[in-house]
Amino acid sequence: MTSPNVRQDSATLSTITSALQQRYPGFAAFSGAVGTFQNAAETDYDALMFQVEKRFSRNYNTRVSYTLSHSRGNTSGAGIPASAFQVLDDLNLDLNEGPTNFDQRHNLVVSGTAIVPRTGGLSIAWIGRALSGRPLTNFNSTIDVDRNGTLADPLPVGSYSGTGANAISLDNDGGRNGAYGPGFFKLDLRLGYNVGIGNNRKVELFGEMFNVTGRDNFANPSGDQSSPNFLRLTGLSTSSTPRTGQLGVRFAF
Image 1: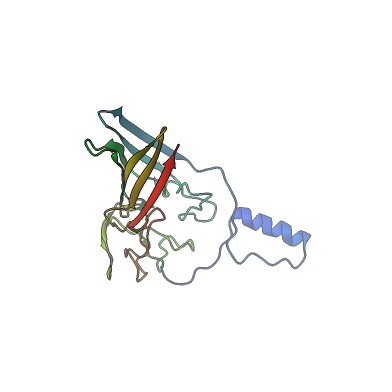
Image 2: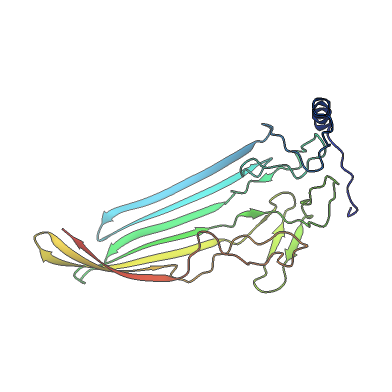
């Protein structure tokens, strides 16, 4: 499974190469990958969305939103992806079935605003967001089980663990995107104090803190078992921010 592959052109590519060689004498046969596009992929997305909102009364309002979703298909859903299971002209899309790259099962958002009684104008606002992890494929780039030259054959079903700093363990259901990476949580808070200065004008003093809990929200680790970073959390999510605070003054008139 690790010896060099011998290139075999598909029937379609052989026909194209032959036509090009007849038209352009001396045209060399292709030595690298040749991509063609087909409208053969299918994806499905199912979701249940739930929201409860309390409008502002009794000095506060709040909203709770939750989405339970499942996205799957015979492609990752990202751009125009290739099938890692293709052998010659056969895309083997049945083997490529699995969650799409955007399959994020749980999405919970809680937000609101409250005016603190007997403080003369103190208010607090919050927004918290919790999401489950995104899928990833566990594979070994030194092994080519189906001998198609694509080193992305998924590892068998089982539990896998990384080694070193920030290594994680996860359960792999097998196939493309058979495992899920770390989840996401972020809480932002805002404190404000209004000072009236007459004639419907006021000054608001406020402080804001982002990522109050200081949580490190990591991006998916490498799923390549041959990599020293296999299942090690080495990079942050693009939505992650450090704990950050800021103060401000706003004049309303």
